[in-house]
Length: 150
Image (cartoon, rainbow, N blue to C red; front, side, top):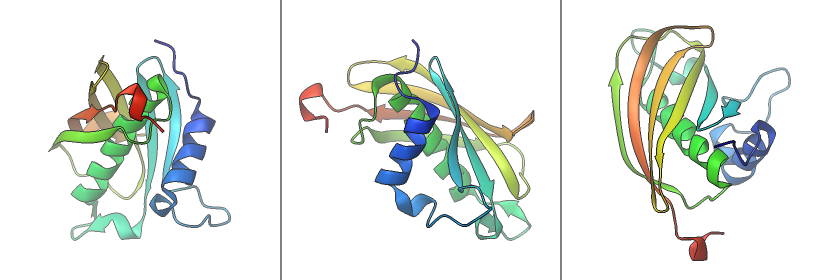
């Protein structure tokens, strides 16, 4: 299914509904979380992992990786159904495979089942240019009935 929402529309939605994710814009710096690409049943979110995302040992923290997975999977669904903010996570499972260094990462989420009330997704985190997978996840989301959508 072709996406119903563009990269620019998803980034604007994210900035409007969740401004705390990226904080105020800083001149010359990209946002921490930004939609990079959308397509049929997928979305890619770019994470700019900086000093506040690093755990002891110099790697990007697990909570940071889980956050980008949740954002990417959620936005992959919204790209298909429209910006339904009340679509919520009901399950998220992640395997940390390798330790990513600070810097840009891509979380590519794929919608593997889109029902009327539930959506199931998978996600892989890699470097922007590809290469080895740093984390693999699956997540399920509850989609509100059409009558309850904002």
